[in-house]
Length: 211
Image: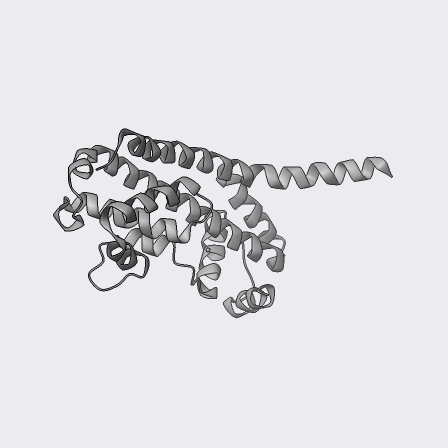
C-alpha cells in the first residue's frame, strides 16, 4: 500500500504533473511521519508495561529508572501533539496526577533538562521546509527511475503555490489498550493510502454510468 502511494507519485512525475505530485508527496510524508510516531508511542507503552512495578510504588519521578522516565516523557510529548489518540491523553493525565505538573510541562515545552527522546521530537516536528518536500520527490523519482527534467527551483515554485500536525491494574490496562489502538490506527492509515485512490476511481466510474 505504501508502495502503491509511492508509485502513484512517481507516475505523476513521469508525466510532468508536478503540481499534482507535490501535494501527494506532502501527504505521503505526513502519513509516514504519523505512522512513525505511532511506532514510537507503542515502544514507550511497552517500556511502561515492562517497568510497571516501579510506577506502582514510586510517586517521585526523579527516583524512577531512567528508561521509564524517558518512556513517560515520550508519551507526554506525543500526547500533546497527537490529539486523535484519546487513550494517550488519559495516560498523560494519570502521569500528571501521580507525578505532578512540573514533569509534564518540562516534556511538553521541551524545557531545559527534559528527557524527551530526540527521535519522537524530530518525527512530530511540524516545521517542514519546502526543500524537504523537494528531496522526497527527487528521492522517489530516483527510486522509480523517473526522469525529472524540471529544476529544483521549478518544483519549489510549484510547492509554494500549492500551500494556502500507585498505579492500579486498570491503569496498566489503559496502556495495553493504547498499544492495541495504535496498531489499529496504523492498519487504518496504511489501508487509507490504498483505498482513497481506488475510491476516487470507483466514484468516477459510478458518475460515468449515470450519464
